[in-house]
Image 1 (cartoon, rainbow over the protein chains, first blue to last red):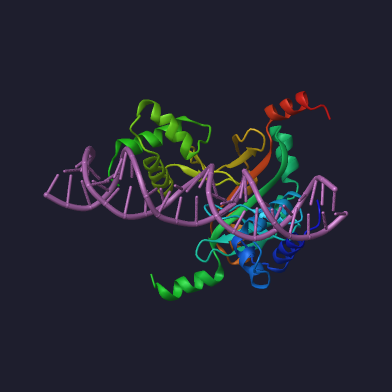
Image 2 (cartoon, chains in turn purple, brown, blue, red; image 1 turned 90 degrees about the vertical axis):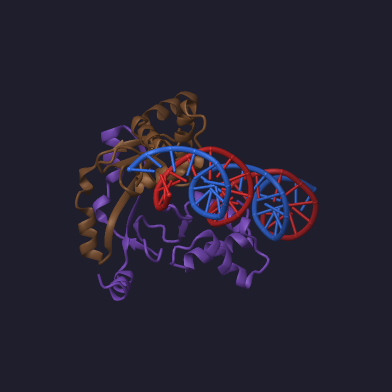
Length: 132
Length: 132
DNA sequence: TTACATGCAAATTGTTTGCAACTCA
DNA sequence: TGAGTTGCAAACAATTTGCATGTAA
């Protein structure tokens, strides 16, 4: 893969923004200092970088994909209220792929776990505004 | 919720087709015997039925959502080759929600696990055609 | 010099919505 | 009767693609 300045920028933006940005967010972040960059280029590079494992694509229920520059295996929690994604360590699932492969015959390449719920901040906000 | 013939048909189609159909597949299945049915109605009813818990919506990476008439909690394995979705029982994860809630303060409403890989049939096919 | 990458706009895909007609209760 | 439902078409959002131009090696 040939070097490109735009790809470098996309990689940096994902690494430096631990908010698990969408493609569109990456685009807007970069657009500030690079007004000429195009959304198509951001998409192309996000796809390339996740194919080569330099970043991780997080598919979420009913929403645009998010991207994560933190490539050590971990899981995600999605707040149904504010839409933020939080990291989750869970050693429980170490070895899960091998176990599933052995018991099912499926050649497992990976797995992803998404936990849905309400983050502490939104629980607080909900309790404040609606006293039910 | 008022009864409707179309909703009944959608529910039956999802229950009777264990292929974890997409909205579009449900539409085409029903269209054979009900040529007047519309895709919008299928979508509306799939959403209603999954909101009421009569069927389960399975969001998949980069693909349209799938639907499952099998409502007992279980997980899914996605074949990256043929796109088929297989059921997976995994008692390991019983109690996971409570555990995460206790350790993170997140008010957990549920979780979903998607295992990716190659199903036995596609492993076979791959081994046949490309001897690497 | 040339194969790969970009920017732009148009095309696709998956899904939702507005609205008039229709149907279940 | 009347609120909920339908079919159709148009609207949407997220993402991808075609193509002429630009750029790293």
